[in-house]
Amino acid sequence: MTPGEIRRLYFIIQTFLSYGLDELIPVMRITLPLRLWRRTLFWMPNRHKEKALGVRLRLALQELGPVWIKFGQMLSTRRDLFPPHIADQLAMLQDRVAPFDGVLAKQQIEKAMGGLPVEAWFDDFEIEPLASASIAQVHTARLKENGKEVVIKVIRPDILPIIKADLKLIYRLAGWVPRLLPDGRRLRPQEVVREYEKTLIDELDLLRESANAIQLRRNFENSPMLYIPEVYPDYCSQNMMVMERIYGIPVSDVATLEKNGTNMKLLAERGVQVFFTQVFRDSFFHADMHPGNIFVSFEHPENPQYIGIDCGIVGSLNKEDKRYLAENFIAFFNRDYRKVAELHVDSGWVPPDTNVEDFEFAIRTVCEPIFEKPLAEISFGHVLLNLFNTARRFNMEVQPQLVLLQKTLLYIEGVGRQLYPQLDLWKTAKPFLESWIKDQVGIPALLKAVKEKGPFWIEKMPELPELVYNSLRQGKQLQHSVDRIASELQTNHVRQGQSRYLFGIGATLMLSGTLLLINRPEWGFAPGWLMAIGLLTWIVGWRKTR
Image 1 (cartoon, rainbow, N blue to C red):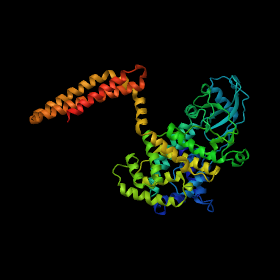
Image 2 (cartoon, rainbow, N blue to C red; image 1 turned 180 degrees about the vertical axis):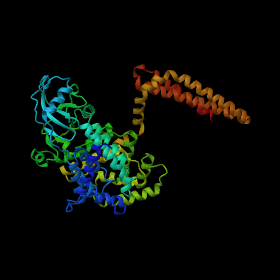
Image 3 (cartoon, rainbow, N blue to C red; image 1 turned 180 degrees about the horizontal axis):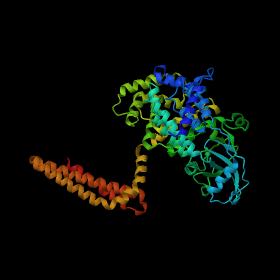
Image 4 (spheres, helix red, strand yellow; image 1 turned 45 degrees about the horizontal axis):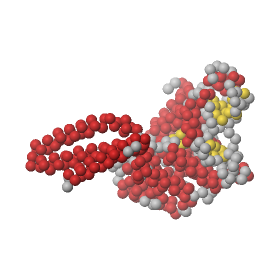
């Protein structure tokens, strides 16, 4: 460690001790060397004894600066790591820091724009920032080319070395956790820090955020539910992002929303619909939808529309994860805990050798009390939390995409019930989930899959005769081997071999005809004839088995 790192680590430990955070370490883990270090090198009284532990942890992280504040925010979503009274305090951490000099921001912009002065690209550039956070700050201006109002987001100068230095120390402290906490190894502290590091580094790349915003805007183009401000990619770089300036009511300002005549029930329900649309329709969701990033348009309060900003953190689920998640929700609300356990095993979220009966019992024990409440009062986010916490006892691997999903769902649910306390999340979401699952099975889903794969199979069609020929030849070789081993069954095997060939040829012709019918309708009757010949060939093969 460098002298600078040693000084910073000493300051971090001193800060933790001044807030009495050594209370987090069980007494039996405080060895004699630790006691000596505590009383000599790190002597520091607890100056906040009257405050609760969660409050002290929050204040300590705030004192350590932006990297630790954002780390605490991330930890607040991992409620398997802390009890509720601590996690709730961490969720209150605010990413607010003093702005850096606007002149430095102007220099950053000029550097990103090839050295030309700001006035060459923007009019009315406001040297005082509109908003400031730990990673970047925002200035207002107008585009010189068309006069449109924009905001310019600029990364803080020299922030990367600070982040890397503190991350290095966080990794070092995470390495101590398994030795200091009895359950430390199961919590996988190094994985938690790696997850945080990836999120933080992604937030430093404004080109990535620009691409995310463009994708989300495309997904909700002309939607009455959600509006994403336009990004101007010609002005964007890794350290700078330019986007349309928006005006709206902060979603947390319930009084102003009500004064504006907003339909609060519809607004709350649309938040749920936006979330499930992003997750299940688009497989691409805004994963940082806390109240500071959500506004509501002033226009059409009877038909309210959300406005989303700050798309630095996004999540996605693959097709299998989406299916298992939807089926998990439905099985849970049907109290089919066996199905929930089997889905966790089938999805690979828990090891394949997991005892399903034990897992089912554990889920039932934890989740059944939830149904003592009316459905409208049940928290989707806490359902996921209970399921994942139980699954982790059965060695469920940390799923970063599911952690992001759970965090986002908690945000959406919290905002929705703040807007409209009677919001029945399950009633709003169930039709969406059932409709999505229905679309994944049956003839329509099969035809959709065939249409999607059609161009690939048409491209491969010239190779089909050779593949069929090779298959036939291999079949003949196999048949000859069987004949030599059991010559008395020769006739029967030949007949079965022939029927297999005919089945294969018939199936190939029918599949080819179907693909052509869907992707080449201009070919007229040709696909139909191909399907008919395939069907006849298949029938002949079937008759040979009689």
